[in-house]
Length: 311
Image 1 (spheres, one colour):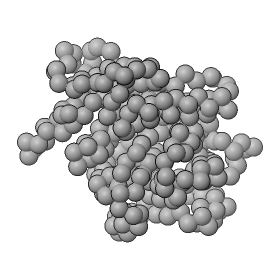
Image 2: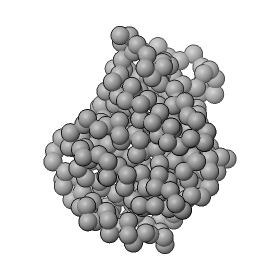
Image 3: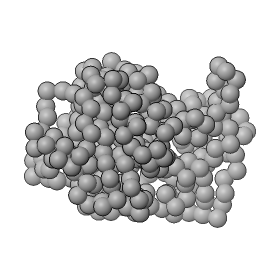
């Protein structure tokens, strides 16, 4: 087994716009290869389950390019060094069939399991939100799993346009299939369009639904509701953010998270509980020619890792 030893100890020779765009200049490996790391990134370039504007398939590549702006270690204003001894690996992308969704889900689960065996903390870059269901299947051996979902939409719909596996349904399928999935907390819900059956079904299962206007007031309640040290999978939908902050997403909703509030939520969750995996989904870089959305997404991942390892 190859153990990655401080891949970031030597300053990179390229400025952010030069060189090969692996995530944060991490060494690259096959998902099932002979390696071990603290953090491993896996891309899922898949967006055929969207109900609106496509483009999330391009996010893994753009997030890697944006991450070259944020290569650890970092030194903050207090002089503290972050992520200095944390090893990174880039496991590339899941090899996906273009028009075989069932096979795509199988490959996503299989590849995510391979990465989990080799990394203390896997980070998944979607892709539309449908990929979270097969990703969560790779955690079916994790006892007492909790999900924290930052999202404008509930994504608990039973069926949309004749399919049960769209980006509107990942948490419904996960709740049905995974006996180890204890609870889902969704923060940031808003908008004109809600599925009454999905809302009722989520509440009947005991899930916590927090509208955007209640996030700050209920943050303490939400964080302390889970037993301390609970294993948590964090799923961040790009549309959780206010589109003035992050415009590059398929279905933007006004009045969403500021970056500061999203990071505050993540910080409180990660410091109190055990982060076992995370995904960033629904980022559509083609809808933001400024590149700001990818930069914000890459920074959010890196700051989450700072809290997970150095918080």
